[in-house]
Amino acid sequence: MKSVKLSASALAIIAVSTTAAAARDNVQVAGSSTVLPYASIVAEAFGENFEFPTPVVESGGSSAGLKRFCEGVGENTIDIANASRKIRDSEIAACADAGVTDIVEVRIGYDGIVFASQLDGPELTAFEPADIFNALAPKVRVDGELVDNPHTKWSDFNADLPATEILAFIPGTKHGTREVFEEKVIAAGCEATGAMEAMIAGGMSEDDAEDACLAVRTDGRSVDIDGDYTETLARIDSNPNGIGVFGLAFYENNTDKLKVATISDVAPSTESIASGEYPVSRPLYFYIKKAHAGVIPGLQEFASFFVADEIAGPSGPLAAYGLVSDPELADTQAGVENLTTMGGGS
Image (cartoon, rainbow, N blue to C red; front, side, top):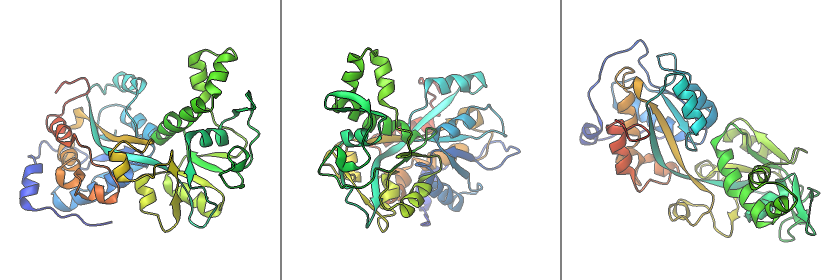
């Protein structure tokens, strides 16, 4: 991992005074596997540039991290949850029930979700959301009728795709990436193919049809991955016909093993995500437990360091790894400086 050293002037801008010590002297972070490499880069640089211990950063997925975050207040609970989606209302309620009432939401930038396959594998290089839906949904439209998915090869429903067996490795339900995958790919494909309209015409309510659109087949052609992207990559390595769902940054750091597909004729890149042209992108977040600020040494300093121009800006190490810098980063920095909680309080 690349070492990051900052100038004294840059550190002076970021640093704030240390407050009361606590029994635990290091910041503890858990959550999204997408945010993990960014948080790890920042944690290592923080340990190198400050007198505080290097924060402990763990993965586990957005939902798992937020669940741990909402366990309560105190040194036995984590300080920060990383997430590749916004915290849900139900999670905010669970936090409140456990005494976690002041939460600071920090948007660090943007990332894209990509479909990638073995570098020397079949030409799975151009998809529409409809293709992914037709491959992975349990029910699809065939000859105008909604039927159990009969497709076993990509070419069964799109002659431009290869005649290879359908096998997709998708993020498990505890990952924030899964929610974005469902919303921006599967749901979009359900609507584009007319399957949602057929569900409603068949008697489903609109809400039930929307839920049904997000289902994936359970016959082994769609495989949930509960681990991080390295597990998905291992599955692709051992299954030449497989396709996996990854974050753009992970793909860009594994181009010697993977080739990426376009979505709706747009190739994923930092430029196409920043412009909004690439259709499958999402903001990335971390959440701070405000009650721990001033108690866990280095917590606010770490958060401020994470979103500093020198780190999260377009010329920083996070952008070099693949993060698309947030054009509203200055507002984020102010929110962290003031520990502005969700709902606007300080």
